[in-house]
Image (cartoon, rainbow, N blue to C red; front, side):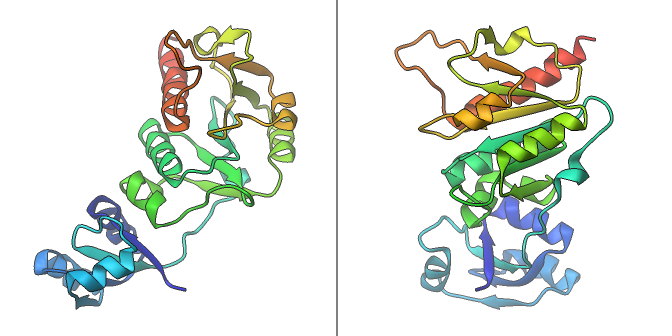
Length: 232
């Protein structure tokens, strides 16, 4: 089946990176740039676009794109102060899209998640990421535990976020090759993955609930690493 994306930010970046095969338009707002890039397009009714977007907010433009090109973990590895984000069992495409956007904004070296029994790249992820998907290295792996073990052999320290942590997320010196692990929305980090963490940190929860949305937690953790490194 063709892969479609929608949302103007996602489409603008996909045009720049050359991933658009064909565009479907409600009006002529994109015709000039598409013609300049040599991208074929077709005018459609709103009803046709609604069906293609399956109820999503397409903003009057949907594009068929080439398959997303995943990266390898090896392409993310750095010699010094690397930063990789690992997602353990995330299920919500909105969370994945928001995390990808945070990764791009922070200049994270790559994002890794499980290939099976977890959310993957789709049109919702692309739209929520607002174009960031075009610039973030993403790898799908079959075994998170094995991946973490391999990264540790390459000099990375693994920091997992979990309520059981004895340290706050701000207590760690992140001036090292770092892997940040964020768990699933309902279950958190699995036991096997937690066992591979060199540090287990928690975020302060002073209200009535005991956890944050996964994408919010990831954003806090990612930008805390940047803040710590900028202090040096």
